[in-house]
Image (cartoon, rainbow, N blue to C red):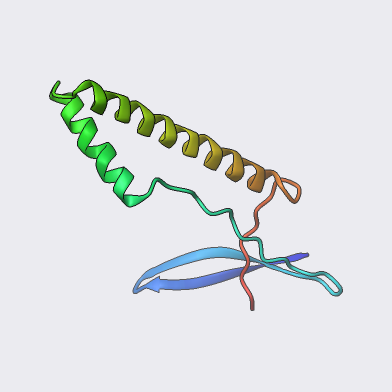
Length: 103
C-alpha cells in the first residue's frame, strides 16, 4: 500500500495534515469495526449513582450496601470484559488499526 499526504482545511486559517492509505493494485482494504462497548443499563446506572451518594453520606442500609456491592462488581466485570475485547481488537491484523480515507 502506498501513502498519500493530504492537506485539509478544518477552519479558516487552520490546516490539518494527514495521511491516507491507498491500496495498491490487487490489494483490498477491510473495514474493521471496533467491538461494541457494553454498559450497565440506564436504570442500574441511576441506582448505582444514588447508592454511591448515600454511601458517601453514610446512610446505607445493609440491603442497600449489598446491592451497591453487587452493582460495583457488575460494573467492574463489564469494564474488564470491554478492555479485553478492545485489546484483542487492537492487536488483531498485525497490531495495527489504520484509519481509512477513500479517495
